[in-house]
Each structure stands twice: as structure tokens, then as C-alpha cells.
Image (tube, rainbow, N blue to C red):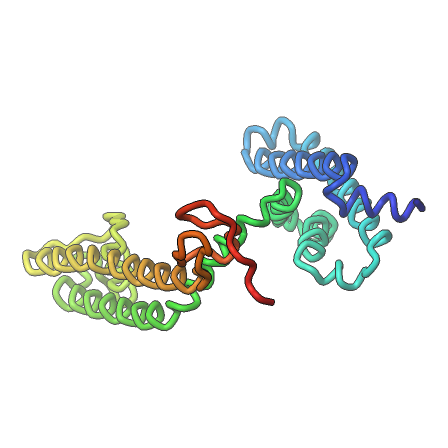
Length: 270
């Protein structure tokens, strides 16, 4: 095995012991690097250990740069790796430190490194759980029209409540403009309730109470939309294959055994 093949097996592989060890050490380095970045934003720690954090950050940057160049060197398809999700994240995780030499403050973008921890799905063989995530994404995609219509409806309700409060309360109560009144409506309907602007008149308080009651319906509707689409998507994902033992169907697409009697299911036709 050549040096390039050994490097590829270690850096990209997860089956070998060396590959698993390398990836786990890489994740530990990523977490340490992000921890240093977060600690460096705490003013007392920055004043006392700023130079130490700076040196540690450059150490990790050099390590990740060498790792990125090594991946490019041993990758059988460099272009495919460079423009892949992980390739782009790997590149973006080292650029901010170099950009900070010309643009101070750019190193704060290093939190992008945290995305590299997603490699743990590949390392710990958790990719099969991504099928559940895909189910959620498909559900959101199927409900997108209903969600968009609901969103426009909510915006309309917010504008109406904001306009009413602007007319009823006016600048003397803090509702100095329509945008600020709409801001109050957003805060009220989303149940955040900062309290920086409050109605003073009885009529204004009555409208505010209506807005608060409306917020409960607004919160419940998207949950119902998503739940209904999730049930339909789950039903579509069932396999139309009957168990040869108990002759019952409705199995998941990746099922190998019957969910009712445990007998092995016939393989689907390709």
C-alpha cells in the first residue's frame, strides 16, 4: 500500500482502527478550537489570556490547514471533495483566521468549525438515523404551501392588530409609528411579551387581549399542519408488501422482518 493509499484509508476511512482514531481526535480538536473561540469572547478571560487564546487558535488553524491539504492530496477525486459539503466546510473552517489578518473580527466566523462535528454521524455509523431526518424534511416540503398561506395570514393579522393599536393608543403611549406598532403586535402574538410598549387605554388593552387569545390559535395551527403531513408521509413510506407468514402489511421501507410476527419479509423487487 502506497503512502497516498494509507493516508486515504486513515483520513477518509472509518472501517480501520487508524481511521476511527483519526476522526475521533479530529472531532476533539474541533470542539477544543470552538471552546477556545467562545472563551475568547468573554472580556475578563480575553484580557487575561488573550495572547494564549490567539496562539492556540493559530495552532489549530495550522493543524486544520495541513489536514485539508492532506485530504486534497490523497483524495481520488479532488474536485468532488472540494465542492462537497464537507469540503466546503473544511475550507471555510480555516479561512477566517487568515482573513482576520486583513479584516479584524473575521475570526469570529470560526464557529463554522462546529459543522465539522457532523462527521460523527459517519464515524459512529449513525447515517441510518438520517432517514428519519429526511422524513421530516419531506414532510416540511409537502406542507410548504399550507405553511406559506398560513404565514401570509399571520402577517395580515399582525398588521391589522398593529394598525389598530397605532390608531387607538398613538404616540403618547409609545406607539409612535406603524412599524413600531407592528413590532408590538409581533411580540404580543408570539407570546414573547417584552413589555417595552404597553397599551394604556381600556380599548387598547381589550385589543391586546384579543391579540393574546389569537396567538394561541396561531401557535396550534402549524403544529396540526405538520402533524397531518407527517402522518401522511409515514403512511406513504410503508412498504406495500405482505408478510408470507401472517399476511399483514404496512411495513417500513427498510424493514427486513414482519412487525407483527417477526417472520422474514420478502425482498422488494428492484
